[in-house]
Length: 335
Image 1 (cartoon, helix red, strand yellow):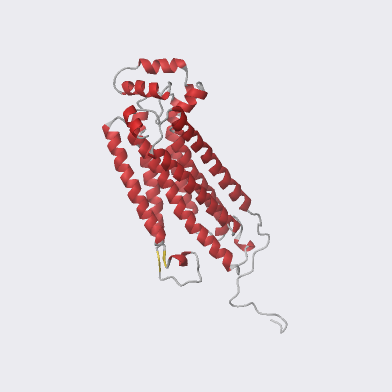
Image 2: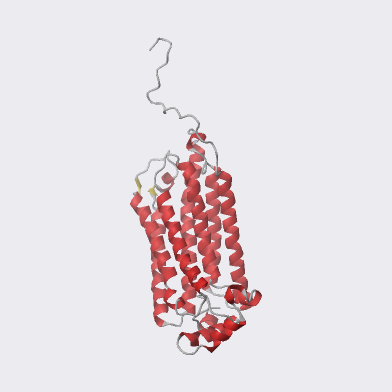
C-alpha cells in the first residue's frame, strides 16, 4: 500500500454493491390501504342499509362491525404513516442518521398492531353474534357462544402482549430509550397463531349447516374458499415476517396483507348479511330465481322447515349463512 492510499475505516459500513435498485413502493402502500378501506366501508354501508332499512333489524353485531371499520381505518392510517417514514423504500435509500423518522415509524407500527387486533376482534365478534342469533340448532348456538368467549379471551391476551411489548412501553419504538424488558419473538408468534386458529374456527363453524342446504355448488365453493383465502393470508404474514436485509422494502408486502386482512374480514362479515339486499335489487344474481325459491319453499321438515321461515322473513330466495337458520323472535330481540 502506498503512502497516499487511505486505509478503509475499520468501523464503517461496507460499500454498497453497484446497480442496486432504487424503486419505491411507498405510493402503492398508500393507495392499496385507502382502496381496501374504501371497499370495506362500501360493504358496511350495504350491510347497514340492509339491516336498518330492508329487514329493520339492527343489533349488537352491526355496531361491532361499525367499530371494526373504524379500527380498520386507523390501522390503514398507521400503515400509510409507516410508508411516509420509510416503509416500501430500500434500506440503502434511507438516511441512517434520521432518528426521528425511525422513531415515528416504530410508533406507527405499534399503533398499527394495536388497532389491527382490535379491528379483527370486532369483525370476529360481529360474525359470531350474528351466528348466535341466527342459528336455531342448539349445538351451533352453544358452539358460537364458546367460540365468542375464546375470541374475547384470546384478543384480551393479545392486547396485553401489545401493551407490555417493552418496559417502558415507548422504548418499543424509541431505540434511544433503554429497554428493561421486551417480549421475545415467540410471544408475537403466539398472537399470530391465535389469530389463525380463531379464523379457521369461525369460518368452519357454519359449514356443517351450509353443506346441508340446497345451495348452488359455486356458492358452496365460494364459502369454502373464504377459509382458504384467510389461511393463505395468515401464512403469507408468517413467511414475510422473517428477517430480511432489505426489511424496509419487504415491509410493503406486509402492509398490503395487513390492509387486505382487516378489511377483508369486514367484507366477509358484511357479505353474510346481504341476501335480502341481493334478493330485492338483484333477484337473478347467484341463481336467486323464482324457480329456486319455489323449490326451497316446497322442501319440508328438518332444515327445510327453518329454510321456509328464513326465506319468508328475508324476502325470498335460497338462504345464505347470513339468513338461515334463524328465529325471527331472536332477531327482533336483537334490535
